[in-house]
Image 1 (cartoon, rainbow, N blue to C red):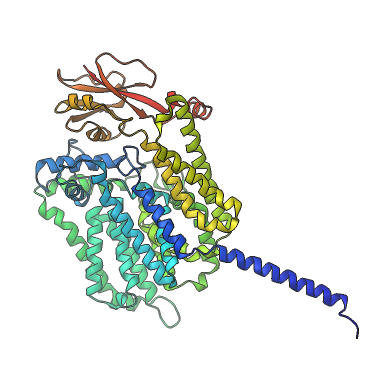
Image 2: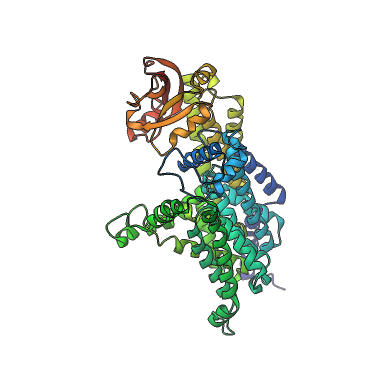
Length: 583
């Protein structure tokens, strides 16, 4: 008998090549899976990143934090829940009292006035939202590690880290808004069939969300619930059944809206001056955002920072270092849309509804999309194993760049200011972060497993760098604090209530803000016993009457300053000195 012909041998080589490629694809797919142990360790690292620097003056935050802090402090000092108080007459009823009451309770009516005490409830709301994302992902996949992964993804989003820790309305608002949809998904399909119990529970959750942010939140919540009910009621041909929607779902949806508005209306009923709420909050704060910021609504929609294009880009800016994995998820979800389960489909609908609703006002911000991020995290966790290694490589590489920059700046500061600038813990964090991003370079199979830890390591590195400028190095001496106690201290500010942060630097002092442009010489109307904070360049001599000084980070750097810092001239461009002086 003749041996196999050449064609057969070639075919055999082809089979071997096919099997080899198949094993490689299989190995690559397996490497994208995250074990429960790695997912749990990632969440532990996330908790460390979120807890580190919680009381820092230099936390990644938003300027509104000090506005709310001042209202909480002034209201607590009044000894009454309502009306809300403020040292700025035109900035009182900026938000419903939920956040202010939260601050009053956490600080025991201002008796424990520290940033950690003020902020820790925000952290609890954020962790609770992450838990809801994890539970939904577990329910959708029946896999524990996917649930842990979803919670980690949500915490790894840059906007979650930035807005989920400070004393802002976003953490409770995000939790209570998403709680409405979590309830609908967790008890589906009974939740969609309920006429009273579930609509009442959802209405209460929505009402708390309104009480935390604004009555306007009822629009996206209501639109999302209507879209979900419309998705659930289908004709035999698959089209939406509007008749069933009106007959079966509309009464429950209307009752949800009534309950939510009733909760919000408690503010008007309990406040002794409801006219001020209407004037300042309803008309000024909410309807004012509908005013065109430019001459043409269409022009503002299509051009500029708040255009539809910039607004759409906010999804990826909110994701931060996970921008490319988010893009990959969108592509994979489109390719596998026929395989999507009900939870994934409904979460995509919610994200789309939220985007469209907040597309209508002329003021468009990525912060308005935060309520969709827990759902986006669930979707990303479901598709995580389908993403290409390059998506994770971009996250790890970007994390490495940021960590490397922090390390370089740290070395320059030690050169200029001495080794006592940073503690051993800072160098340990940097060393661990560098080692973490190096692991995938040695073995690419760790790319998916290291992506989220690399993000949290980046958060830790940045926080460790910034907290070096908090007290004691970035604070006043005990003698200066004692000298300021009980006296009026005038502080420059470039944003509303920015001077409020000095209540944490000079406890017991009465802080008054003045315009930043006068910061070199101080304000004009100063009492004989008052103190003034003036800002001078880092190496400038002490001004007359100086009591003490502290170093502070500068902001709004020019391109020339950025270039100088990159080439080694760091201290004089990155720092300034705030001097406490007698006038």
